[in-house]
Amino acid sequence: MRQAVILAALALLPGIGEAIYFRDKVSWQSPIPASEMVTLTQARAWNGNTIWVDARPDAEFEREHIPGAVLLNEDRWNELLPQFLDSWSPEKRVVVYCSSQSCNASREVARRLRDEAQLKNVFVLQGGWEEWLKSRK
Amino acid sequence: MRTHVFAFTLSIIICATARAELKWEQTAVELHPTPGEKEAVGHFKYQNAGSQPVRFKSVHTSCGCTAAQSQKDEVPPGEKGEITATFKIGDRTGTQVKTVTVQTDDPINATTVLTLKAVIPQQLEINPTFVFWGQGEALKPKSIVVRASKEFPVKQLRVTSSSPDFQTKVEQTGNGQFKIDIQPRDTSRNMDATLIIQPESSTKTFYAKARVTNAASIQ
Image 1: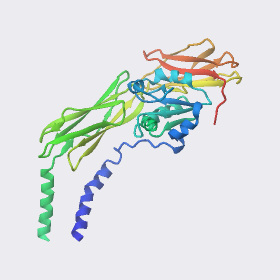
Image 2: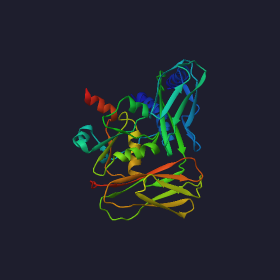
Image 3: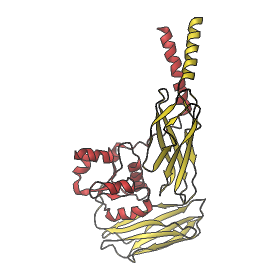
Image 4: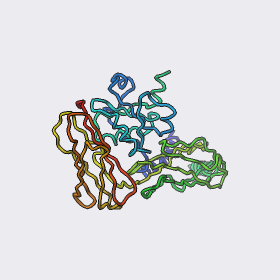
């Protein structure tokens, strides 16, 4: 028993060492406040008061997107932002999505809309496009 | 006790020598692309330091903006290679961190996360990029502040409105810093304009938007 504990402790050492050594090198996804996330059910309940923003690359948007969604990605931000703002109005809520729960593009686009365009009521869709696809099944 | 120490040492030696092991020269790369560069490419070099071949099972990137490629599917013992990660810069600015997750059949070190950090210089900081007035709002100018980064000094800024309904006035407020005052001709009806911002020293065009809208803001 004692030997097993010693062996387990020894086995842990490299892991602990690595965790300390790489503590600054792990890329964590920036946490996003819960108030800025929205579920598909919530966003749908807003009905006509929603502007869907597709933050995925052009090719994925062209393949398929949420009906009525506006393309706004960081590949062509400068060009697409004025087009998006044409469809924006203050009473509307903006819901940004990307491919899945793990993608970060929707968070970045939402952040830039808040910080650079100083828009309010900008949300990120939980689960992204994958969630939308699931809901169609 | 001596037997135990010997058995333990032996097991360590066996584990260290018999396994497949992909040794990475670096798992984090920092790139500093120059303005105008469309891509930033990171090279992650490795060597199979073990005695067994290593097979790549998958190579996934954290973002649609990054593509990763392995040169080969299997790495024989002793052989070197690299994973190339190509990050599409687009209109991104600031520090961008993208990851590439590499999965191999090495049972001890099956997953390696490679980190590509790109520090993209921001030529012009425009804040905000959008100004708007509600219908009937007082006819007062709103301002956009433009700051040029130290690396790209800007002495003059040309601002053009796509619509005569909005007037613009550019004022230099400091070294590489400008204030653009925008004012609609009236706020009694909906109107909008794209403001084309052109630094004299750059071929790149920047945009901002101005608008008069009839809807009240929701909270």
